[in-house]
Length: 396
Image 1 (cartoon, helix red, strand yellow):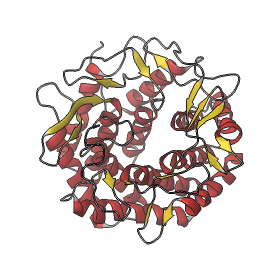
Image 2 (image 1 turned 180 degrees about the horizontal axis):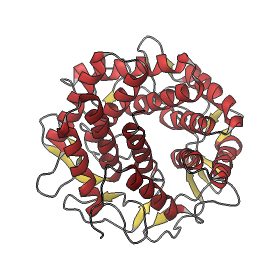
Image 3 (image 1 turned 180 degrees about the vertical axis):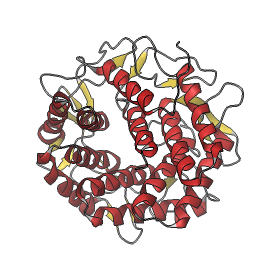
């Protein structure tokens, strides 16, 4: 491990993005289409045939952002490679939806997930903003797809899951899909300037962070029934579920902090800062591990820790949120949190030998395995957080 650098330096953040990209360099592209999505610590691929929609879209985000930021046409070509895979392999024309998972380039699970479709929208929006003009039609088409099948105007939120032919809608409702749809809508607005996307992001943020959070005493619960009432028992026995964990998620409170402050740049209203501050402060008050460092995965309604493991994305989203809060409030305590989280991640999460971040650590910061990047993890969270802090430091 190397000594801690200046975490607030744009030069450091830029180098860290480059170092993270280097882990995937030359080994993630599948010449037959798309990207390999299962990597061990040393970068070796341990499953070459399975694909997940979330990873497929996040690789597009990674290479589109890097292509523009570093002026790398080869990265933009990788993003185009990923977009082609979305359009030609994940997309199922017979039912007009994106396959959730693929095996050997064929649909394995065709359940339609709002969460996954939100990342399709993010991929198209990011690609277009970063100079891939042919991505533009995909923004509107994906928005319309979500509008037709997931949007529930009476709730002002998106439903979560549908059958492969769209004939049945699950009764489950979740905040996570709406959070990432808000992220995608903000990206679509920044890429196109079309206020429809900004208005939708505002609606989602207001309904989750104010109305729904009121059911959780000001914090955002993950799971709801079809009437958008809290379901306190959903996945109670599975607090480590990859996309639908039980408990209050500190990382999702702080991810909403970041989104609220992004929204505030475009449509500023005082409640956004107030809610951002409460969500962040509560997440760290309940979730920071004073003994071993880092932010835990989940805590129960009574405040007890229900999952003490440490996840990479939680640390990354939280340091980005801390930087945004520091800028907008002028309070040094948020820079203190920023540096404290980074110092923990630098010590425990970042692989200083091979690059990129480990995915998950035990409560006392030990690795569970050598599977650094399974499906779902492309270091989109870590690099995205660095880009966001750079923008913040530039006053953007």
